[in-house]
Length: 325
View 1 (cartoon, helix red, strand yellow):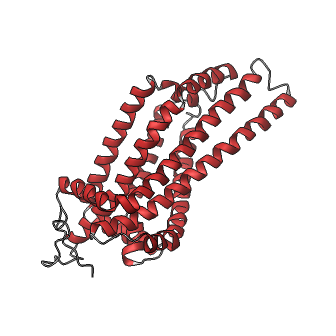
View 2 (cartoon, one colour; view 1 turned 90 degrees about the vertical axis):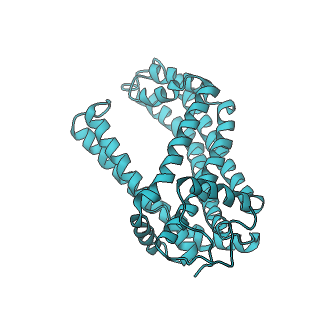
View 3 (cartoon, helix red, strand yellow; view 1 turned 60 degrees about the horizontal axis):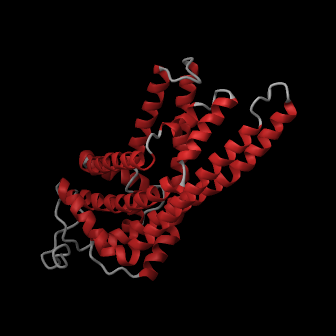
């Protein structure tokens, strides 16, 4: 049993205690998590800019070419496009791996911060980068496959409804429902790494125990996470608009994918003018702080739920929150 001075927290205390946990751990572990997230964000930015620039260069060469009759030109374009796609996928993979490493470290460090234990880098790294990272990778792949399947089903439903290639009510309903199902799955399993670290559960038992803990108090579990997600999303959108102005060109890039080459090249040119380091560098810093806060917030919510479930007995001898405030 962990000796813990937490009491059940109200909504405001959850966020206040999250800042306390970050303050306790930032100088040793938090800065490492932040730099990993920042590095991942910069890799992701580079991959996006490289992809847009490369796609623009490839497609602009074939404007005016009838690709339906000129098979040689069509094959050449496909080959050049796949050459552009390689670095993009590399950047995405690096971003995902660095994020998983950062999440594993943050999970272990935030539990030390919750209990006001001293953060020792050596033991923390061994706990984070051993089975914790392996389980995180395994679970992320499994959940990723589930997400792909759900969106594939939504696409099939939209296609069967005769809405392929257009934004129709059937398409909107299918993908909104898919998003809501995925959101529920993410919320139900968000305590999986805490269960691995705190109770030393395996990759699949931790998923089950995360779901059971979430169901003990669904609104206490989901409320702070959703509130932070909506607030952070709104801030990100606002800052994006302030930094680059009208961002509709980025959406236009994807919406033009089914149109002729001229439309695609025009959309890519618009997106290319906005997707620069002026946009991505501040975004990478903001996102890194956001994910750092989210990983710590999940641990604080996890602790609150376990206290409410009666897993920890309040210690009158150890006042962890008060002794360094």
